[in-house]
Amino acid sequence: MLTEFLQQLVNGLSLGAIYALIALGYTMVYGVLRFINFAHSDVFMVGAFAGLYLAPLAPAGSILGGLVVVGGAMLASALLGVAIERLAYRPLRQAPTLNVLITAIGVSCLLQSAGQLVFGAAPRSFPVIFPARALSVGGLDFSSNQVVVLVFAAILVIGLRLIVFHTRMGAALRAVSQNPRAARLMGIDNDVVIRFTFALGSALAGAGGVLYAVNYPTIDPLMGVLPGLKAFVAAILGGIGSIPGAALGGLLLGLVETFVGGSQYSTYKDAIAFALLILFLLFRPAGLLGKARIEKV
Image 1 (tube, rainbow, N blue to C red):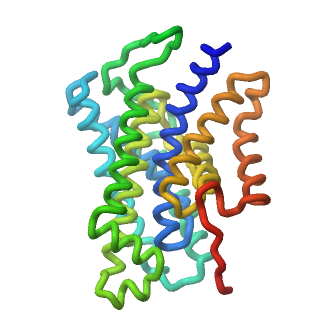
Image 2: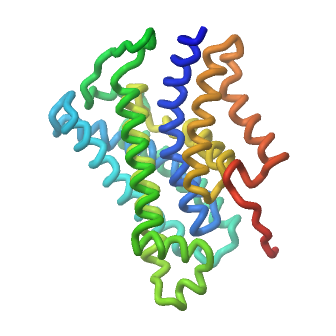
Image 3: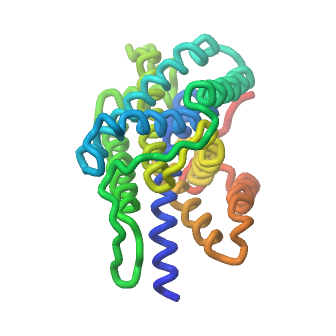
């Protein structure tokens, strides 16, 4: 019984780490611009396809090759995120929030349709980019890819925290998040900060796309829809706008989904994720680590 519990714990942490990477992008954009970038889940999909096309150019099945593929996917996703912000969101900077949300949904649909046109609608097999081995420790069976996902996610989350709290750009990002007008008066270029936020959040989504494809090696242009929705739920659970909250929410959701999936209620694992969202919105709308805000309307 204990072995089964630990097995599910490892599986849940591996899945939750991917949700956490996607949720961080949602929470970063919300923290600066106060809107949800629903196209973020499709940046995740583009990151996976970028990894698919970069894989033949890197040493197959090696740590170096995996690093090259993940780094290239992060770069491609970051560029896409910057382009989305510049072309779709910046012209609506002063528009009502509803207009921006509708635009975000439109960009998401556009990316999905473009993905089917460019990549094809049929599922594609993702190649092996890291050394893949079956591991067994103390009766626990897991793959080396799960270890890779956990290590990568930990490094990226720690790196993000260092950037946000220990660099000048991070200080500017926090200033814009708290008060954009005051930040501008202090000489901060808000456009640069917002562009950086989209690039960083999209890069994390791109890494999440590749790591997801490593563990679940079949990708398609609609692969980001359900993980993106669940990552949004994770961001709400942890506290939208909170970086540690997004990471915690992703891990929590991954654990819940995995434990439910291994029980007799496995067919309800997706429904339970959204039931958690409803419960949190009813009883703790600020999330686990979020702070309640009083806003003028």
